[in-house]
Figure 1: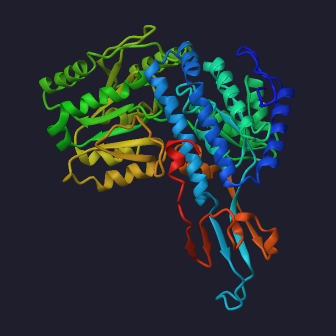
Figure 2: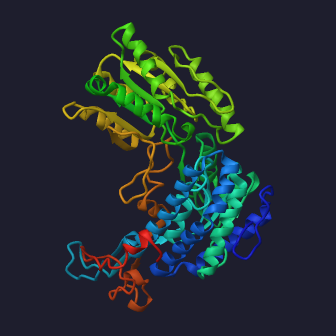
Figure 3: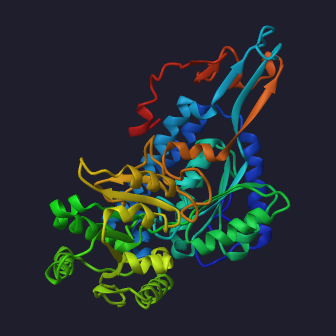
Length: 511
């Protein structure tokens, strides 16, 4: 265990069950001490963590380069994103909208009969267990979106380190806990554990009230089932990835074929294809001649001519990638459009199939290849696309490549049903942290109807509580008539919003 009052463990050591119990109990104590902290105090804690990560950036990035095979520019950008996210969340909780503070004064003439004084707001769940991802060692790991949003909500966090970057996890946790301690946060508000036994015990622990997870479908489903099987089942907010299908309309294909293929090549190979939003499927009109069929591979080869291969995140992931590509290539109706390889730094592979083949075997559309590979599916008529989309499982993203006058209403409606983010003439890799962002989707993309990215992610770790006929002095601050925390309140059906002065400064700089 690594906490604010303990020295860091070595990266090769795992946490035993007794230490896990200690970490969770310390987190529960910290939650109870910090649950009444006002927005300004909590925002200051997040700001301190952001500043600490900035100050330790050189060391953190250096460790990440050694452990993940990712380059310095990518890792520096990811750490910058992580710091920005913390400050954005700090600004968000200062505004106080996440409380959803609602006040109904007593009304003897209410239409349903006399109404008592009722006041409701959102409270934090308690201790949250977070499982980090391997492919984003900063943005979706120790102080990634799940940890940051849980802390912003007012919860305590016990983070299970990913085995793919254990040394980085230890150092990041040291930085986070030191920053929180210096800012006056309760000891134990954030801690790190490692190892399979600790992971299982974290999900099982009766003081843990929710789990955040980013990772594989198999691993996420196992933990989801475990969380549901507890005597007290708890919410499991899992982001499990997806295929992220792209649908190219005939008019767009005729007008922008080379541009589309170039964008596709860049997107499915970005980060060696190890993004959860990688476009793993591209639906395009079938070639009308042998020359057209040959042009597809020729243009893709040209678009990938300057591709610089790199090692995948780990040997385990490399093995899984190789197996997935070979298995899909062996499916009836699938052949190789652009042949790559499975070397230590693999060259990209593009497979090809047809609408008829995937109708006969929809499993072709459901095989994730976590690495620089993708599948092109050729269709005969645009009228087929909505039905083909219906063969897909839940997606994090789907994309339309279309022209303004294309009739895509039916297809767009189907894509809305199966995905959490629908793009128009773009590429899904790149998930900005913002107010309107949604990074989620129907199972198996995620296990909930929420987002794990953006300010709305904070609300996952909250639940509503109503207070009826409470004395004014005993009400929580967001529900008092004098509104000491200066948060938005809906009073007798009408929203009253306080001044936003000073909040904007939280996003770009120090609190």
